[in-house]
Picture 1 (cartoon, rainbow, N blue to C red):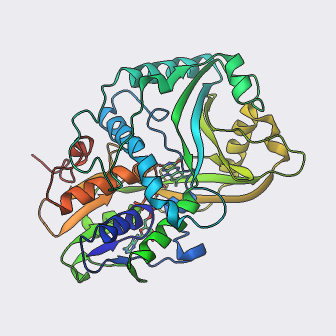
Picture 2: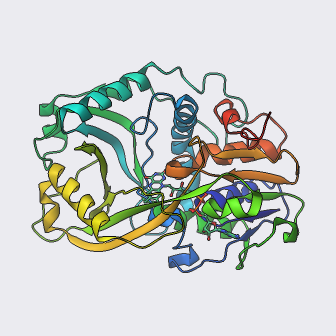
Length: 385
Ligand SMILES: Cc1cc2nc3c(=O)[nH]c(=O)nc-3n(C[C@H](O)[C@H](O)[C@H](O)COP(=O)(O)OP(=O)(O)OC[C@H]3O[C@@H](n4cnc5c(N)ncnc54)[C@H](O)[C@@H]3O)c2cc1C
């Protein structure tokens, strides 16, 4: 069994395949081992904010994207429990367990109200879920109730996040979203793979025909288009990493997402600091950090968290989100090549969608139906007549 791409999706799939003894040998093809523990530091998953955010990313018209995100969010607690033995000493994987969403001006408040009301009306996407959903497999789920999502007053926001400026016109809180530390996650997945006997080939695949394996999982992020002709395009995003200095305001306790004059910005707590993200541009394969990107992120972050100016700016980095035309990934067996399973095109949400992707790949390998929410992500949906 081969997995092409050894970032968050590839490693999580390789680990799941190896630990459930689906294959005698699991080989990950990944050319980049430049990060700590040999993780790929050029991958989007190294750059990402690590938010698990189907509710705060919800947008009318994206029913299938929302359903897939909620399904995956339910799988995270069990996924993390299984990964726990492999988390390296130091910060935990889970860094926040709730999100505040806020809007600063009237127009943004109207958009936020509309999106949240839409999300709150969506049916439970996992009601008729089939495939791995219980027991020892990482696909097990836990309930998220409607009560997890609610409007809060400005006073409640002040009590929960005292370091934020008093600029919000509309505020919602989502319990059970939050964030993971994507870099700790990559390290833990690498260790978990090693413990299960997964091996690495340190070269880039130029043609899937050259991969000597009976089944191939394609998890090459923005590199997947070239390999399989999928409509996956790179969408650049910049983030900043900040470290708290003595005497600084404490970072927010949970994730804070805001619209500031129409621009989205988020603050994600990390051990000893925070991540500020993220810009979004259709610039093709461009990973350079721009002055304008840094300026806008800092200006918007300071509007909602004035203490940010006292932090140390430790890193400004850009990565490529592997976006599909409808913001759904490609999950499932290729329509013309039964050897090939797609697990790619996760766009802005690949960290969040990792557990449901693992469940979908696992189901394909067992020839059982994929989770219901993953059916809309069939790889041939754009080529069907
Ligand atoms: C700025 C930014 C912020 C983000 N924030 C979030 C967030 O808060 N929450 C969230 O859920 N998601 C977020 N994302 C999105 C998330 O990072 C991606 O969706 C996710 O990383 C996709 O995972 P992947 O493993 O498919 O691809 P990647 O992480 O991009 O990894 C692809 C891997 O494939 C390898 N590869 C490519 N071509 C080949 C080849 N030919 N042969 C072998 N290997 C190959 C690459 O070296 C790379 O390691 C963010 C992304 C960016 C850029």
